[in-house]
Every structure is written in C-alpha cells, then in structure tokens.
Length: 375
Length: 221
Image (cartoon, rainbow over all chains, first blue to last red; front, side):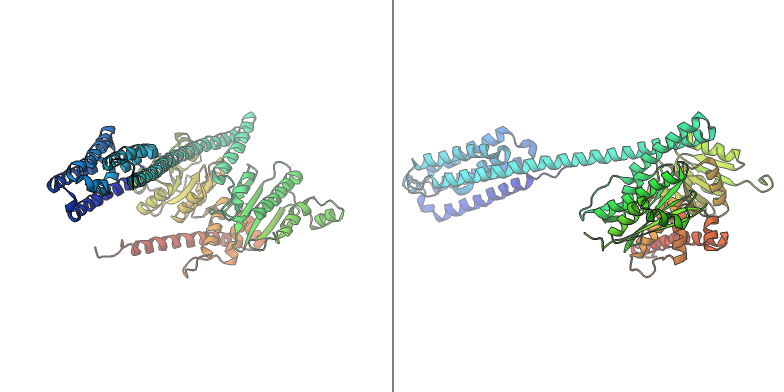
C-alpha cells in the first residue's frame, strides 16, 4: 500500500500499554505479596504473561499476522491468566476486590479486537474478559462491575476511533489514486492536444496553399486550431480564493484565425466583476470590428498587466473612421460603441480611448485600475 | 534571388512529427535553404549540432525526450553561433518564454503561412529577432512581472521599449512602428532586440547566481 498506515500508531499504543501494564502487575505482585497463597506460582503466571506480551506484540506489528486465530488466542490466554488468580490468590482477598494477577494487563485483547474489528468486536472481547473477572469475584456484588465497565467503554471508544482511521485511510488512498490518474490523464491530454494542433495547423497551411475548396477546409481547420489552443492555454475560468478571475483565460476564448489574443505567461487576475466587465467590453470591441470592417479584417487583443492597472488594447487593420464620426454617432444617439465599451470601463473606474485613422485602422485602449473598482 | 552566389543558409529541423519534419524540410529546400539535418529527438539534435553547424535551428518545443528549453540551451552550448527559431503548435506560454530566456532568437506558431515561416528563417539567419505579437506579449509580461521584484539588478524596460513591445503585441510591423514613432526601421529592430538581450542576460546571471549559491562553481569540493 502506497499510503502510510494511519492504524500503525494505534498498534504502537497498544504495545506500549501492554508492557506498561505488565510492569504495573509486577509492582502490585511485590506490594501485595501477602494476598497470595502461592506467590511463586503467581510469578510463574506473570512470566507467562510476559512471554505472551512479547509474542503478541511481535505478531500484531505485522498486518498479515493479525489473524482470527491470533485474536482468539489473545482472548483465551488472557482469560486464563485472569482465572488463574483463583488458584494463586487467597479467595478472601479476591472477593474483597484485590486486583487479579493480570491487573490492568487484561485490557490488551479488548483493545486489539477493537482496532481490528471496530466497536462491536472490541465490546465482545471486553465482555468475555470482563465476564472472567466477574466470575473470579464470584458475582456482581460490590465493585465487581467497575473494572469490566471501564474496559467495555475503552474498547468501544478505541473501536470507534479505529473505524474512523480506517475510513480516513481509505479516503486518502482513493484521493492518491485519483490524483495519480488525473495527472496521467493530463499528460495524455497534452500529448494528444499537441498532435491534434499539429495536424490542424498542417491542414490549414496546406489548404490555404492549395486554394479552391481546400482553402475552405483549411479555414475550418484554422478555426478549430484556434479554438483548441484557446482551450488548452486558457485552462478554464476558475475563480481564485480571493474571488478573482484570470482576464487572459477569459479573453483567449475570443481567439480565432482573424483575432489574435496576446497575453503574458502569468495569469492576469482581476476582481470577478472587473474581469467580466472588461471581457464584455473587449467582446463589444471585437464585434464592432466584425460589423464595420467585415470578416476579413484582422484584430489583435493585447493584455498588458502593469501592476496598478491592467490595459487591454484592441487594434484592427480595417478602414478606420474619422475622429469626428464617433462623436457624431454618440450625438445622434447611436450609442453602441460608446456605451458598450466606454460605459463599462468607466463604471470600473477606468478609462477607454478610441483612436481611429482612416486607412490605418482603429485602436481601442482600455485601462482598468486594480484596486479602486467600485463595489 | 542571389542565393546561388552566397552560401545557402544552413537549417536544422527538429520536430518529432514526421509529417511536419518532412513538410518544413521540403519547404526550406524548395526555397533554396540547405537542410543540414532533420531530426525527431532533442538528444540527437544536441549531439549533432556542432557537427552539422546550422545557421538556424527550427525547433518544435514539444519533443518526446527532452524539454524544449533544455534542447535550446544544449544546442547553443555545443554550437553557440546557431540561432534557434521556436516553431510551436500549442503555444504553451511558459515553455515559449523559458526557451526565449534560454537564448532562442524567435518564435512563430506552426499555423503561420509558408511565406511567413520562410521569412522568419531568413530573418533569424540575418540576426533579426522574430517577434510575433505573441512573443512580444510574453516578453512584455515577463518585464512587468520582474518590475515587481525589489532586486536592484532586475532588468527594466525603457518607456520606448515598452511602447514598441506594445505595438508589436498589437500586430504592427517594424515598418509601421517606425512610421508611427518617426524612427528608422533599424532603430525599432534594435529596441526589440535589446529587450530580448536583457532578458537572456538576466537569465544567465540568475543561473550563475544559482550555481554559486549551491556551490557548483567553487573550486572547493
């Protein structure tokens, strides 16, 4: 498995608990030696517990060895150790609540079951071992149930945590797989896009040279090439965390064989409204070129990010208009250009200049400030 | 044409698509250029550059084995007189900009017409920068990005250079720019070339600084 196991720390804690509780059991055995009828045999039980602690810790450390038989053996051996208390301790001491030989060590299997099988399995193991403890005390009187109930709660809690980590582990694994797959898909897409672009560019070039019907095919290939290139380089319009849009990514969508969109390599981020309004103004300017200069006129859109402001220049090589004509049109109430372009940009606190020379073409320059866009 | 009298311009074509490699080679040969090599891999191109001594390398950036930037750098390292003309289909912005910073002399899209392409090769051989509007936009953008850097030795554009790059970016020819600004064609060309040289120089300084900072250039082990 490529993903780091999130359950490994749980197993390490259980191992640590087993060894620590083993030490606690040994200390209790020393302090309470007067409660034991067969102190020597009690040490023998402790030696057995020590052996099992070492064996089981080594076994649980390897995921493949966490088998049902190991878990079953864990419960059986631990239960036997709990019940052996009846043979080595004074019956009186046991009844008044002296800890069994195992002391808290008896919780080990319940925790192991919980990690492997979740809360239900943990609870089951806790009840078996708790049952042995109750049996040893000879009934439910006094504090006999306290230990088993705490054991049950601990097992359920650890089981719940274990289920959560298992689920998190799966999710992480899935995310890693998805990431690897999408990286591979991206790589393939880049190669395929490049190949398709190569072919389209070739068809366009050959078509234009052959003329006639082939020229039409070449023209169509050119349109598709521009559209695909825009798609590849634009990479979609994703709203950034700060609510900004990349103006370049929006504008490359306007590229066609007649319209070149020229942008920097870095994204040109503008507040969403400013980006959308600027793009709308650019679209209006391009429509204007189509309407007044015909389909054959070429246009260039240059995006220049000057830091404090972003400027977009739209130039065409159409026939151009005399400077008075625009003002005349505005005066006559034909507000198309002025309103669609200048109005939008002025609302953003920017400026729009239209410069046109008959015979040379028209140049529209939009300047949009970064900070002072009115909300 | 006086191509017969002077030695033909030597061109190496590097493109992994056989279709393009053949078409470009044929176009060049038909127009009187000498195609000294046509290869499909970057490694191969870098290996033979010094042996075939091309005046111009027409290089596709998307090669299967080595990134185009590294091929540009490798060719120029083994045969410095070569001039690299980037010929790209996808126009991946970052790749083009990096290749130009690594020393490429120009960039045109593959969808350019045959005449535009041949003209670009001719101009590259003559030492003129081939600035498509797209490249002007990238170079302008790179200077704008660098302008935000506080380091004292970052290259800056003069007002005139910025103005000229903006004009190239909106599709104006050097001739048209010269007319508008009342300058000579040659002066416009020099301004454009200057912007490119500044970027390439800065790139080289950056590389050297990186090497020194990482101990690659010192004598000590």
